[in-house]
Image (cartoon, rainbow, N blue to C red; front, side, top):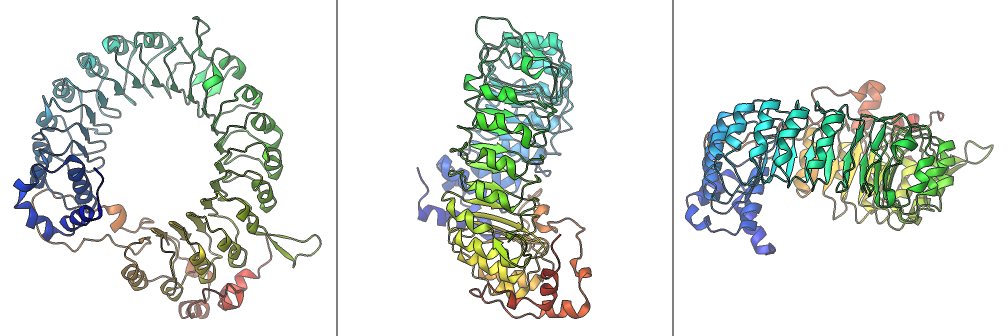
Length: 591
């Protein structure tokens, strides 16, 4: 059943305010048979708006199947008492709830409908809490990572024979504990990152015939037995001798392999006993590999992460040789330059996402990006991109570089944060009519470039951080009709009144700024004890309690001029509109 317009309006009205909630709460009998999908939509909206309280849960006990309270520190025994009465609860997420301890789990003991329980990062849970969980016999998924459960408590989990997914990350899982869990023959997902398991204990993985996903990152395991059912493997930060032992008639055929930060005694040997025909995802980020020739054989790769690796222009050729099917390539924080883009150009016809953040590329690379026709997302943050180049021998003759991006018909997301682009070089971005997300962060940008964004009809998310944006510039801005998020953090000239006026004029846009306060904080009706508290990440300054006062860069006279500067002409796009202070900054010699 799809929610129609009328249904959505009813749900919005029901969760409009504390007063409206109290009004229909008294009519709870009419909601007891609310369809699950509508009950879930109403519950999520009440949760998002911080209008939930323990006794209100009672009206949902016959119609709700999933509850996600992760990170809510107010969830305690009172909340759990009501949740324990839910007749059809199938999934309960309490991850990171600091109020959850052993005793409050008593409320959900014997809950036959519950199949999915997440109490990861609940630091008060110990072996005693496991005893309550053992009575939930139909559990299929259990997450207890980063709790205080010991190896003895883990051994007790062997009675939950219906488990298909078990997350024990960060717990002291020993070889003995794994041996006790061998009765869980339906197990498909096992997370043991940071455990005490050894190579000897890893041999016990063969007792799980359906095991498809295995995470043994940050362990001492350096070689695994032949696991033909395995699809996803994470051996990040391990010292790898060989991913699999060379035994068995069939080589394991992984589709995803994550070895972030891993070290290899011999990288060719490590991949030798692995069927790479179906390997589509490979994460080699932060690894110390200096020879990437083994990539040439991996013709099925669709996602390759080489960020923070030793990749250079001299090592990029094997990547180009295997790049035909690549859809996602991450080369962030490497030493590649324009030369690498030249080598990749024409070799990646299916590439949709390219991350080049903190690399050594510059504006000359952009012409090669246009030879990657399927690009939808480009991350150029913290690079040498300026938005222009200069004619040879003439530092005054600027050649704009960003217009070439209009040749990428599929481009939807562009990140230029931390680059050296300025107002005049950003004007060509108005030609990128298909952009949906644009991220900018620079103290060389002002009202002029901000108004350029009005010409992007499909823009949904606009980041304009750290810019010299004035109240007049904001209030005269005509946002694209589809704009949903406007990030103005670090725009220090904007006042609380200016932000408030803009939010009032465009309530459909979520604005992020240091002065933004969470809505509904003024609701003072007491609806019950332990009401959900406001989300402090929204009601406190988004940048924390400390942010740089950019005003120190300007004299008092320049600040007065910036504050009182007239609204920018949306169609002008001319540097003549810049206040004197900005003209002085823009005329400084290039670095």
